[in-house]
Structure formats: C-alpha cells, structure tokens
Length: 217
Image: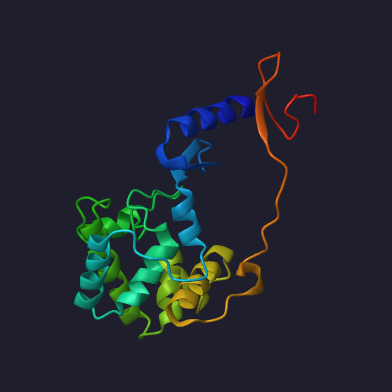
C-alpha cells in the first residue's frame, strides 16, 4: 500500500509546475490527502523575516482589508505569510482555504462565496480577526490563538492552548509583526548538505528511495 501511495505522490509531483513540493498526510477517516506548495511559499511560511508580497494587487488588498477593520496592515501581512506563504490556492489537511486559511465554517459565517478569491478571503480573514480581538479584549496573543485553534478552545483553556501548532503559529506571527523572539525550537537551523537521493524501480516493481544510484542499497 505504501508503494502505491508513494507512486501516486511521484506521479502528482511530475505534473505540478514550478517545482511545487508535494506533501501527503492521512485524514481522520483514513483517506490519503495530497497537497502542494511551492518552495518559495514554504520558505515564506517558515521565514524569520517578513517576505515580500509577491503581487502588488495582493499587497493593496491586504492594506485595504486591514485598514477597513482597524488593523495594522503589517499584522495582516504576518498572518498571511505564516498561514499560506501567499499561496492563494492553499488548502490544508483540515480544510482551511486560501491566503488566510479560512475554515469552511468561518467562510460561511463571514459570507464568503469563493474562499479562494483573494479579495473575499482577505476581507473575511481580517473581519473575523477583528471579531476575535473584540472577544478577547484586544489581547493579540489570545486573538491569534483563537484564529488558529478556535476561540472556544482558547476560552476553555483560559489562554493560549497547549498545542504545539497554535503556540508555533502565535510565536511566528508575533515575531514577524513586532520582533518578538522565537522559541529555540523555531529558530532557523544550519543547513546540512546531504547525499543525493534517487528514486528507482526495482525488478519486482517496487519503488525504492536510496542514496545509491545503482539501487544496490
């Protein structure tokens, strides 16, 4: 089964433009879920500095959506960068969509017809975040945690919930927005050069990933 899934990943990868990075996870119901992001988008999501907005029209939409909701455009930029790396077609394994990774329920709540439309997505994301700021009395950390994990969860825990994903999200956004230090676990690591990897089909028709081009190992 793993060989079949890997072969499927490789087949999808071969058809994606721009060297998009293919990822695969398994949903709660056991369904394999394959999605992609380009190396540039991935680098933006995990960057320790604010990345350039790839399109001037997107930057203008971010600014207008932020200002319409009384938010600092730099904060919304930081959220978009960490959420999607400016990937307008981003889709997470949990179903979050577009630039600000709107969940289906949030998109419905905010009256979004097309969550992949940049303008609609940014207006809804900024508007929803403004609601969270009001709900949490202007406390930025709690509003960000609510955006990631859900406001009910934040209230249930009485603060940022003890989830690695949420803690990482809050830390990354605040680092980009106001320069807060990143936890050691999120600090950039030195790049180590590894051996080249080869994908080989064995005589018995299995797919082998190896550092040996001969396939002997």
